[in-house]
Length: 515
Image 1 (cartoon, rainbow, N blue to C red):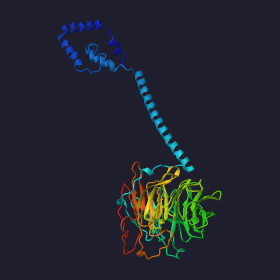
Image 2 (tube, rainbow, N blue to C red):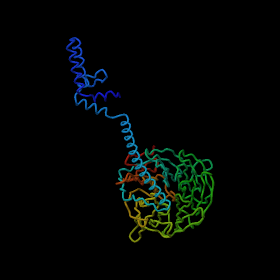
Image 3 (cartoon, one colour):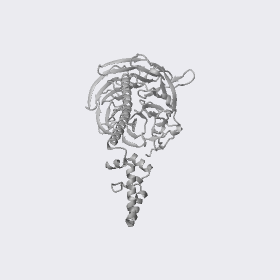
């Protein structure tokens, strides 16, 4: 910026007036030149934005006071002041960004701390998320049917990402279902009895199945004492484990590993390493056929001993076991709620909650599904399956009375309150919650999964269905897989099992046997 501009502003007004008078006298002496000077003098007045130069000294004094003050304001800031202002603005922006970042870091720290605290409680078996109060009974109109198996479904599992369901049945087949579309992604057909040496798959009733926590391996066990290992993604057969001397009745992968635990009617528990395709060890202790098995991330598993009326916790590394007594009948189903709490069901109609630190049940509900029979000869309905939403206060049970009951566990699992029942049509053979807790799947038949079909196919009625349970105040939904609602429809071609699914986002129509 030219320094002469500021000098001219401080010019003596008397000197400027004298210079003006001198200019007027010169215009009088020369007419033509005076006219031209007059025109040049008016041009600056018509346009105030005109650039000021050293040739317009005489016109600078004709700028109005308002314009002059505005010019003073516009050029008041020096380069050094501008740099200082921009520096302050930049520092304020940095300060604001750092404050926002600090708030986000604090929020993330709280989230991480909360997650770590949950993991610690989960490892200790003391985590209990209270979600049961938000559950609402399902609307029967939301039930939809998928068709596939031609004999009763005995067991099923859900993939860790909740996108697919594997189901197995007494027809020796395995079907992989896509949850959202309801389509069959893959079917592994069963073989006829006696064709096991040349058939890739099962040739006897499949009783149990399990999937690894990373979704890589699927394991299935059958009445022929065999364990089959499959690649879950492609349903490709990988290995066959032999060694049990009775039907394989329970399978479970240790969470976070590919260690597989198996239980059998031969009263033994075996440990396998699937990655190495290897047998590890065998544990003995039960006095009767083992009817169920489950495990989580600890190096241990829990089993139900059937008619020996015991629940056992097996410490694999120590090769030791803890024995628990409580039911008056045969214990037929078992599930871990967390690392230290268990739910079981028995044929005496009772459902019990256990702690691995107590030899007796923390809570028992007798006649959990009511009773049947004539007056004076009443018998409780057999509890044939249980399921637990891990690390929560929500469990479910299924029975021969065509009902799936959903329960709320009390604080520290001391007590159970019924929430609601879902009507089904048949014997509930299997129940599984999804890993996210968004839905529950159940397999329903006309007889228990271990019983033999004793009538002709066209005379047997069985179904598999699934219905939605909405949640009132949390961003989640619970879906129940249960027996078909409404009258059973028979076909002359063959009876089929139905898998039904619905959700709040999308519902699907029934799929006929021609699918």
